[in-house]
Image (tube, rainbow, N blue to C red):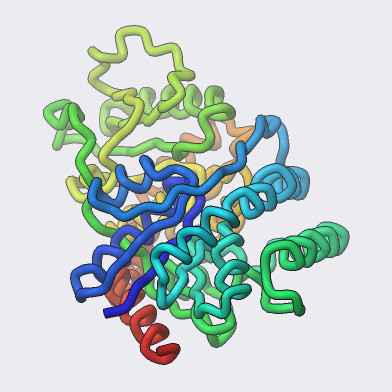
Length: 390
């Protein structure tokens, strides 16, 4: 039996893919624990019996809604990711001392996991919940790249081994990539293992009105994830208008966790259902014809896992890269989030609903995802790393 410590940031999209991997390891007789600034979030996603070590966290700050491109990326690093690593490090060290893991599994944005393992001489693997980093998102931005390299060097000096070491985003021994080349379409280092999405059942959201769904019409799911509630009002309103215009053949489920829409009589709307959350996997399994989203990696992969084509409207961070992957793979259409028009959005929705090429491409990627092995394949790679290191 081996022990695996998952070090994750307090972000749903970064914890969800590892939940199935952890469950698979436990089913094989291994022991798993977590280190995270939000133990309650881990317990909600991984189960109340999850063994979680708390860490200090860093507030993400109020990122200005208008930030895009390099400015948004720099804000993410300077005001969240780097402070998060410094804040988490003492708790991660304490977790390692108490749990004594054989392998540390560090999320690609939880640098404290990688650097702590490096400092203590423990083998570590990277959990890459998005493939965007494999594409060199800083290509063409030499000043930003230089600035980031300096910040990471300072972080390693403070938290990691004294000498220069590998980039904490990429383990030199094992990187678990929760995608496949059919979507990511890129060459990667030899240490990367394409395992596909880790899609496992989750606790069902109570109260979803399944009886509202009309089997005689196509269903479109609209979601901007859990981290974009501050910027989505205009976009969601445009989505609602466009989809309502197509109500003779389309019904839509629109996720509005921040309550940014004017929702008069929403409970009685037979064409557009506006809810704060949805049981996304269950809804996709039940039958969705298209997903309109922000190109978040988890949402994209869950849609494609079920063979559902997409309309993607990336906002920031890794989303433009993921949106490009969707378009290049032929599985969806991209629209501009900040300047979307009803005409452009309507044309995109019509395309993915009416042109079978998009659904065929989504189905092809979904087949590749399932063949990659998901949580089971990831667990096998981790146990092999533990055995090699033992």
